[in-house]
Length: 161
Image 1: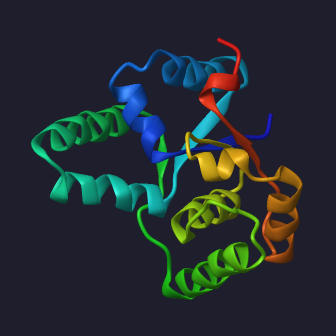
Image 2: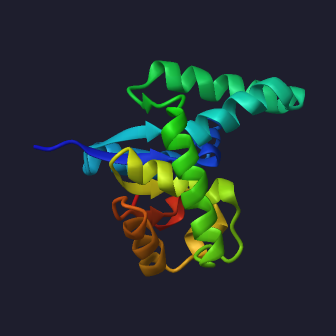
Image 3: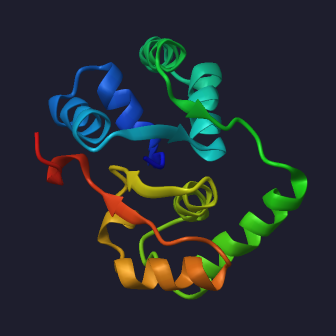
């Protein structure tokens, strides 16, 4: 059976570590029932490390729990990108904004999508409203135009428990 990959977003990792029920159930469903392997993309890794260095004491405490969960898990963690990909992904993120694919989104939101697609994820589990509210068809047309693969954006609340 071919491996299936799903990318996890920053807030979802924090929610899982802090025992947010629907986050834990969503991860359990994808891992246990659907046999997904989980991927942490460079933008998400950066957000976690940034919070560790610059957050309040409470954020640092939660970040420590997230990092501990990552260390104890089988997550595939991509910490960096080669400069060539970094430049291309910056351009692709701008394409998402220029085409108004993510009307309320930012370059960071677009980067999460682009990186998840690049790392062969067929699903992105997220709580980012800009990604959840965007038109899935437009997301995938833009990814395909960038030479990337289609992806399904999922909310943890919409997955069966």
